[in-house]
Amino acid sequence: MFKPEKFIDEKIKELKDKIKGTAVIGISGGVDSTTAAIIVHKAIGPNLRGILVDTGYMRKNEIAFNEKMLKGLGINTLAVDASQRFFSKLKGVTEPEHKRKIIGEQFIRVFEEIAEKENAKYFIQGTIAPDWIESGGGLRDVIKSHHNVGGLPKDIKFEIVEPLRDLYKDEVRMVGHKLGLPEDVYQRQPFPGPGLAVRIIGEPTKQNADIVREACAIVEEEIELASKNKEMVKPWQYFAVLLPVKAVGVHGDVRAYGNVVVVRSVESKDGMSASYSKIPHSVLEKISVRITNTLKDSVSRVVYDITNKPPGTIEYE
Amino acid sequence: MKRVYVIDNGGQWTHRIWRVLRELDCESKIIPNTTPLDQIDASGLVLSGGAPRIAWENLKLGSCTDYLAQFSGPILGVCVGHQLMAVYYGGKAGPSEIPEFGLCNIKVIEPDDLFKGLPSEFQVWQSHNDEVKEAGEFITLAGSKDCKIQAIKHKTKPHYGIQFHAEVNDTEHGEQIYQNFVNLIK
Picture 1 (cartoon, rainbow over the protein chains, first blue to last red):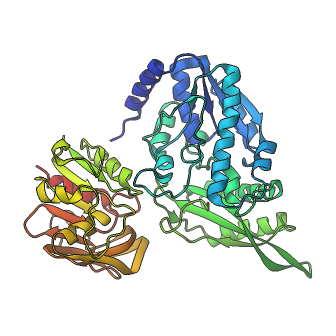
Picture 2 (tube, rainbow over the protein chains, first blue to last red):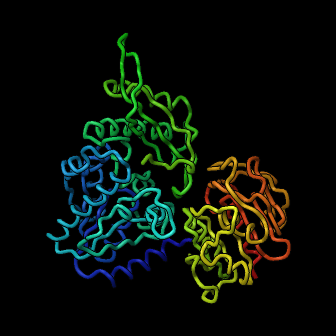
Picture 3 (cartoon, chains in turn blue, yellow):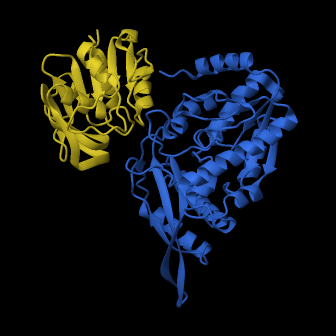
């Protein structure tokens, strides 16, 4: 069995020996990067600089929430608004792998600039096992280039350190719990590194990001409320995806013609296989009504995805 | 502690096999399928699945056929590893008429060894385009509606094959199947 205490002790020792001087860490506020940050923080203390990048593709209120949480955990944190840079580099880009590679490169460029200012030779990432497995390499087929593995540029100015590389999500959660992270952090649902950009099928414009951000917030709120009220068990991951497909609707006796939003919710343990969540229809209906009413100018229809992994993947790109 | 290595044929779930073995308190590591046999100090092997497509003619998968010929301990072939085994021992494998992905029910035909203590029908997770068509020197242990040969056992050697993925969480009793395999290792 996996023993989180042993893992933590060994990693702290290993990191203490390895990292000399300052290191920067990219933190999204998710379980993986936050857990990696705490472990490295225990090893090198204030020499760790946590960087929160606002890519423009973060969830609703996420940057403010993460900044508060990380500072509360004692980590020296800097939030950087790089959204304009990401929007402009992704202008006209629709191919999923191209999108992921651009995002991977921009992340690194932002981190490099900060590392240079901070004179840091090391860059820490919260990479976990499925990230590098799905990114391919050698015999393995590329399923998705994860921004922190297959999406990395070739010329990088610092050494990358990945303390959680061999762990799966459920093991990371055990480590996070052992390290004393708040439950709403270590039990937080996964969120992909490229953020909402891969939940927009087609061009990830700012306008599309705003639509899918609101739709994701509605899915999260309704599912979390229903779980709290014991109408269902909280799924492993739940979100919305914006399709570049339009459908006709009728709003107040007037024809509407808006996009289709997918509600996606799955059950899994480690993300490597998954089955779609059997959410009660009453909850799905609330989500549908709220999305179409709130986003009436852009969304005319809501569908529920009933695909397992495989043959699907959890996210769409 | 039993030493069971995972031969990597490039599968998405190779790492999962390693993890299940680790949870069963085996000493395990993932090694490339090109590792020479004399460098393998394990007492059991699992041949992982992978993207390579088995054709009607023999596919080599690195040194996997050397392991089948010369490795003395039990071997479990998964997915393409299972197909390779069948072909190596005189069976046939090729494209499935109906491939299976994700959820699937299998029926146990022969409960010995691999399916000891398990129900006669349970849910497994699949991901295959090819399948074993003729079992050759193997006995068929389980089948599904669209794929008749889901698990096999060699008539005389400690070689086993499974088409489905017992290493993923969504497969019911998957850990028990691996435990049953590990129990066969001395």
